[in-house]
Length: 278
Image (cartoon, rainbow, N blue to C red; front, side, top):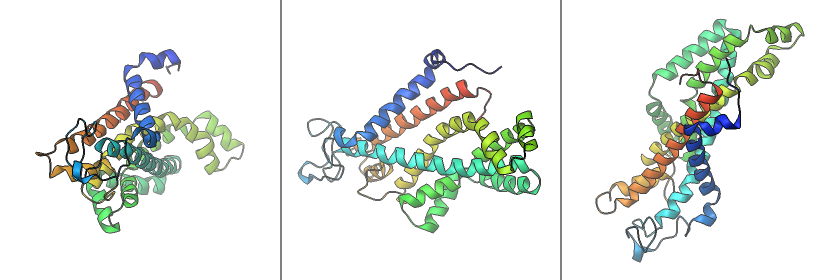
């Protein structure tokens, strides 16, 4: 029996509320970065370089005297923007392929399932690393690479859902009325998968953020002086013993953001589709 959606159900879901609070916190910080950051993210103050957290700043300064709090705050913009773009691209690609495979079956299903299994079998970060290496280091190329290796989960789940929906009475009625296959897929079947897509997208966001941050840490994504959390970690790793705060604070920001989206996704899954297994 399907759960009835109500505000009371939202309030009773601790994971969802905790994830929503964290998400809103990160979102407010990203949107209000220009007002919350005490300095510009690239403003250097060499005489005050490598100052520990305290009078010089809440999070201290880096090797160029840049305020670390400002860099972490502006970094939230990059993390959210990149994560959302990756999720939009991979969801559109995966959902479209999943609809086609599940609706038509036959050779289309076999071909798309083969591509899905092949993509699923390869470690995403390794495949993304190969793509970025071929395209060249840049944040845009990282976004493309992560999206191209992360669509398989959407395709598999939407294919399965489509197969269970395509013979439902409302779909048969649409065929009887002369609706085209495209109209049936996108007007009748797709709306019935929205809850699944929302949950999967929310759970995919932390993976997208972690993947793009990892590639930036390796020097293949954002380039200095961008306040990408991966770039800050890369710059601080050589100073881990002398100035550990340079690595600690962006690391905590990554953990905080990823935890928030995971909790939000788990909470939404419990409410929208409790039978979903990711």
